[in-house]
Amino acid sequence: MSNKDDALLLERLQDSYRKDINTYSGYVRNLRVFRNLGGVHIYGSLAKYYSGENITPLTLRKVEKAIAILEIETGIELEKAIVKGVELGISVITKEKPSEYLKLFGNRARFTRHEYSSLKGVETITYSKGKGSFQFSGYDKINEMVQKHKEIPVMFEGTNVLRLEYKIVRRRGIKAKFHRDLTAYDLFNPAVYQKLQSLFLEAYQTIPKFGRQFYLDTSVNITPKKWDEILAEQ
Image (cartoon, rainbow, N blue to C red; front, side, top):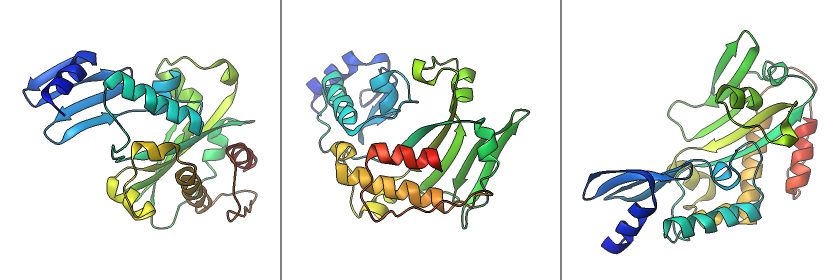
């Protein structure tokens, strides 16, 4: 970035803080922006940036719009921006409390199962492998929003919501699964989305469940709507 671009970006940031001539940080809505000699780094939920909440999943078109807005608000071209972590999640409205489903999640081979429970039951289950690049988690989304005093969208009011998330938390993990880097524009690429769908379902299905078995043919193309239906049935 040129000195002029640097100055413009700093002006656009909220709650900005400059450490030295090469280092500063701030926010664009909920996204944290950090600038140093290594470049510009942006952290946070794209769904919350676009919608103001992150319980409602974004469509590919909305992801594209969110990135376009972010380019305008930061003045940064993101077509070649490298993605260092990505998350694919779904919010499933359930009949019972999410704890009733989470307690049925068993141990996944070669992964460590982390459980957080309270008097209300199991609230969060996370599977990870040491300092590895991949994680899968499930938790009570409504409970999380209530604890953090977040506004619940009308369509989710009075419901039980099980949130399931597949995460690649390191750049090397993205390269291992896609055999290349992903850019910000890849986040609204249908082929990349379908690959992430497959990785999500693969991770979910390798977790033993103490209940009814469900089988799914992942060799066929699965639309976002069908995917929601499948996860709801499971």
